[in-house]
Image (tube, rainbow, N blue to C red):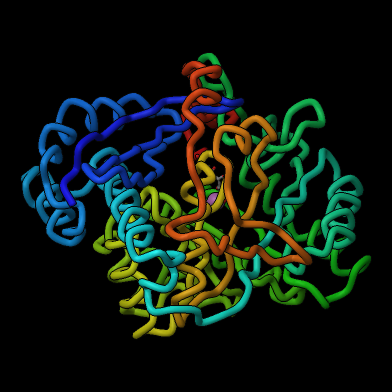
Length: 402
Ligand code: EZ4
Ligand code: CO
């Protein structure tokens, strides 16, 4: 089963996606997501210029060997561009292997450990009242877990809040939007949101919140402690995720569960966090953490230390990533929760898929493989548009973590 073609398709049905499509000599196809939000063409070029020539003629069945060949063969280890490129190839090869076997991918990963995948949605609002009302809309739609983000007075462009009443989208076209951040204003405001949400709807659903890497360890420790009465399912990215030992201090002070890792691309990014039991949920996902092959290693390590999955699932990950994540979620023993932002109708049109949402859960498709495809004609209708994530500055003009 030789690889006959490796295509890299860049499409922008409302936002940019990079998709790898591999075709074998016998006509099987597989797809993988290789989208790195705001740096898409770096990965697309890496794939077309440096990876594609290595794959033509290789045996598509040798997934592990191909992973090792691309990882060790580059000599330069890790990094988001390399690992996202490897992820795209790896995911497409798993898709092909499952299609060749005629089974949904989760069957090759050990079969079902669960029947449905618990997801959380994103509630938001310009004020606490608006955000509380938005949480209610998610509960009405059957969500059992909701992330709540609200605008902070004194800041401009608070993370997780859409502009002009739109849903939050993790990028905008043109140059990066400049936002303003005040930790003091945020710390004074955020706990009052959770109080209002619990006061209105009680405790019979999971409440989550994303700090987006903006606090120091001692600030995060204080926030975690202050919000314990509201029993969060998890506090996400309380501090910059790459500073692993910083989580020790957060851990010493609070029982609020901690999630981190959406920016991780390697098991070495979270080795200490996992083995020292400094977090509760690891958010690494298929597309940015080296594909299904490498993510499984991270999750297997996590399982040894009682850390559960909480896979990143924002809309800058394509439906191909979501489909792959759902197969992994279905098979692993240590599943925790899956983030879910529905894609736009245009995106769903470009990526026809079999997974579906119902009653607070996602269900992976039952088609052989990932159960998702790319409609190349539809994709061609949406050319690439330069877009960036926002940046954040403090009131004195200095850069902060967005
Ligand atoms: O900002 O995916 O939990 N979700 C997030 C996302 C990230 C984007 C970055 O591309 O933090 O919204
Ligand atoms: Co996040």
